[in-house]
Image (cartoon, rainbow, N blue to C red; front, side, top):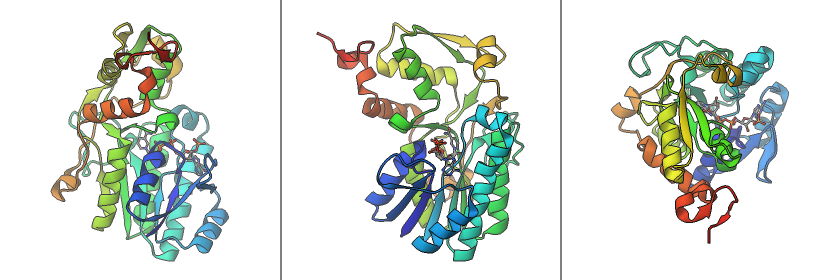
Length: 313
Ligand SMILES: NC(=O)c1ccc[n+]([C@@H]2O[C@H](COP(=O)([O-])OP(=O)(O)OC[C@H]3O[C@@H](n4cnc5c(N)ncnc54)[C@H](OP(=O)(O)O)[C@@H]3O)[C@@H](O)[C@H]2O)c1
């Protein structure tokens, strides 16, 4: 198939595009910024650009990853967030309808309010509590109402992307690289980590199944940010770095991450389990693989001096 991927330069695109190519698909990789020669510029907010691009390239399917995923940016510029996450999604949905091709829209656990004591499944009704969540949910509603051949696939806490990673793992490692020996991490936020490589493979399996609809796709685990940070330090061999548990209402979190976030971002998938399509490995196994493949120079146990970035003698 000839597959248009939007947001291909992001964390998920980094894993998805090579997998699609490996499977023999032709990939039209696009993003608002051109990071490599394989990526063409396509701003999903611009309907004319989207229509012209698709008219010229005639894709057989669209995998719509493009989004503004920074919660603070979304909160501070609601118009920009809606244009990118909701109107951008509408533009792709309209084109898919007109070309009669399937669309995959990546949504988020952030569409839920985080008050449920059990993990969210596909039968739960979204009720977002911040701008990012609202823009993603609005995208879901548009996709469902415009298309019959669609997959809405919700991810949890995304891990992966190497240099393009900008979420939790990258934030922790950046602090260590900057020389921090005490790192503050929230203890009262729980979620379900989603390794982008496993998620990307899951997406391709789901799409080839042609069982259209809305899915949660995640490892199914329930862990806190603190536990994820502990695992990072363990894999990196950084016993010299101390984690300090803080709550969401601490000054540090309020200063650095002021946007309201759901207390629980845990999810499970009833549908992929029923279809026997769940391919997500345990989060800690996946995280270890990811760190060993992408952050070799930060692993003390392998004989590298993490601070100097050089091999120990
Ligand atoms: N990251 C997570 O924790 C997470 C969790 C659940 C769901 N998701 C969803 O998964 C999908 C992929 O996210 P990701 O983790 O790969 O995030 P990401 O790394 O931020 O990738 C999104 C990509 O879209 C690009 N983009 C932004 N505005 C655009 C526009 N107007 N037109 C075209 N491209 C644009 C971004 O460019 P810039 O970087 O230059 O803005 C970025 O390269 C998103 O739909 C996201 O909502 C992510």
